[in-house]
Length: 48
Image (cartoon, rainbow, N blue to C red; front, side):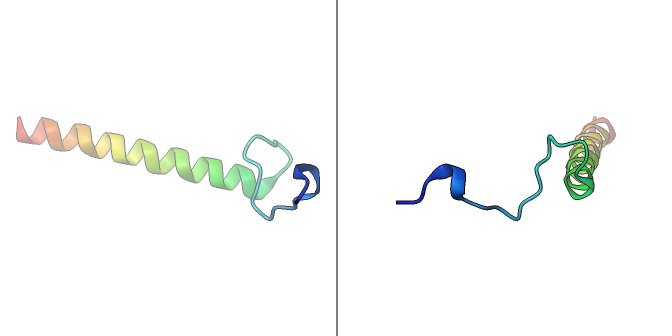
């Protein structure tokens, strides 16, 4: 059985301020979410 403290991960940790790749992933997700929300609102307003 694998002990949880011995499992290594190559994924960035989004809550670490000193991890540039994690920060980039967080900003990309934020930008994509904001774009999708804005697009949905714009489409609804255009169709109204």
